Every structure is written in C-alpha cells, then in structure tokens.
Length: 333
Ligand SMILES: N[C@@H](CCC(=O)N[C@@H](CS)C(=O)NCC(=O)O)C(=O)O
Image (cartoon, rainbow, N blue to C red; front, top):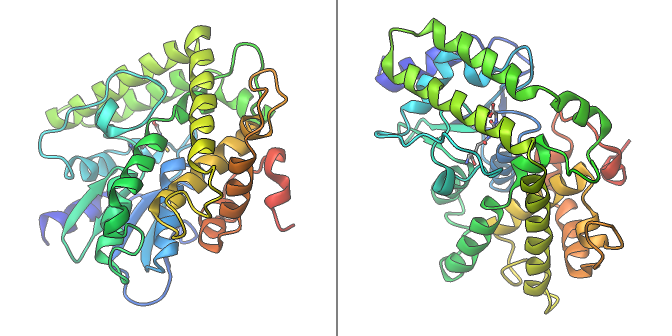
C-alpha cells in the first residue's frame, strides 16, 4: 500500500453507509471526494464535477451532531497530507477563504486525485484542478478569461458566508427558523466533539496541533456571531458585494465573464442560491430594511444560474440538503 492508499483507507474506515458512499457518474472514477450535502464549499466542487461530467467516489460526510465526521482523526490525517507546512486558521472573520483565514484541517471538501496521487484541499483549488485535468481541458477557465475568473472567485471567497449561516443579524434574523434554532450553542457542541477527537490522538503532535487550532477557531467563531456590530457589518458587506455584482452585469451579459459560462458562474450559482436559501433575496429584490435598492441584473442572473442542470444536481436536488421555504419555487415537488 502506498502512503496515500493508507491514508485513504484510514479516512474511509468509518464510512460504511452505502447510500452515503457511492460512485457518481460512469467510467472508472479518477477522484474521491469527501463532502457534505449542505456545505457551500462542497456544492461548488460537486457542481464543478457535474459540469465536467466527471466520475468520482462520493463520501457524504455528516457534518451535523452527533456524527461530525469531519473531525474523525482518519479524515483529518488525510487533509493534513495536502499541506506540507500548514498555517492553521485560528481566528474568525465569518469567511472561509484559505488565502485570508489560513488552513482549517477539519472541514470539507477534500479531494483525492488517484491518477495524480495527491490530496487537494480548498474548494477553489479543487475546482481549478478538476477543470485542468478533465476533458475538455480547462473548459471552465478559458485562458483569455483567467484574470476575470480569478477576480470573481476571490470576491465570492471573501464573502462572509459563514457569518450569515452561523449568526443572526441583530435586528432581523431572516434565516429559516429551524436553522436559527439549530445554530444556538453550535460552537460549544463542535468544540466538545473536537476535544473528544483530540483525546483519541493525544500521542500524535501534528493532529493535536490541528485540533487545537480548530478549537481556537471555533471559540473565535462563537464570539464573532455573538457580537452585533460584527454581524451587522457582515450583512452590510454582502449588500455591497451584490451591488458590485450588479454593476459588472450592467451590460446585460449572460454570464459574469461575458458570453461563456465559466467556473466563476459555477461559484456564483452556489453563493447566490445559498443567500436566497437563507432568506437574503432582499439583496437583489430590495425594499427591505437591510437593503432598499433592487438589483435586477443579479436577480435575473441568479435565476439563470439556478436553471443550470449541473447546479441543480449538485446543490438543489442533492439528497440530504435541508429545504428552505425561501427557495420553494426551485423545487420540483
Ligand atoms: N476554504 C475552504 C473552506 C471549507 C469550509 O469552511 N467548509 C465548511 C463547510 S462549507 C465546513 O466543513 N465546516 C465544518 C466545520 O467547521 O466544522 C474551502 O473552500 O474548501
């Protein structure tokens, strides 16, 4: 067994449910993807794989209590293999970009490329890799649009998506009620579970350091969502991001980089649908106490993106994603 095969076997050992661990697509799968149905970053990767029609082994990891499969030592060990000298995320700004926050050793998604013999982390890096190594090569990032695509990916990556999922706006909690209730005390429950995992590997310093960083990050997250000014600023920032998107769509372009569908559209689809799912379509509908101004270009762009079959498969119809009344018009039944 190679080192990689051993790591994959360790990560896969607890993943025995056949419904949650299955091959997607046809042909010999080149990839193995560890992800979670509702996770924004996982949806980006699944949508990208679906756009490229790539076959893969799918491991649907349960990120909810009591499972929290992303904290399993075998899975964390596999992720650590992707980074030689990881700079762990220990703070919290409500964003999940590796570039600005650092590396989180206990999140999804993680991709194994069996042909290349590597583990890849970070959804944007994973999507770029998939695009590069699957036919048609580089279809989602045409070389003449590379800078435009990169600009859009960076904007979505810097959007405080995590803040508006885990935390409530102090004046109006627009999130589905079930989610709001479920988020109460979530950081404490996560920390408890991470500590249990850390105790299991007390003699492996690399893993202990990874879990310690994750605990620090979750403590910072707990403080962040309990701070009204920070939550208010996160929503305001998203209002500004959507206004900027409207400006770039002002020439009635079909897709964000022009007339070709790119990776930037894959990523925006996931982002805009999530915002709508959370109850934030006021960002483009306007007429709301948190945003008065309608953004019609974004509204029609979001509607177009939601019609994309690959996106629907990956982020609307994928089994196990909780439903939200805010997006009921997108469900078939
Ligand atoms: N920059 C990373 C962020 C990954 C990330 O934050 N994943 C979230 C779901 S979208 C997660 O696994 N959260 C679980 C946790 O923190 O316990 C990426 O894009 O892959």
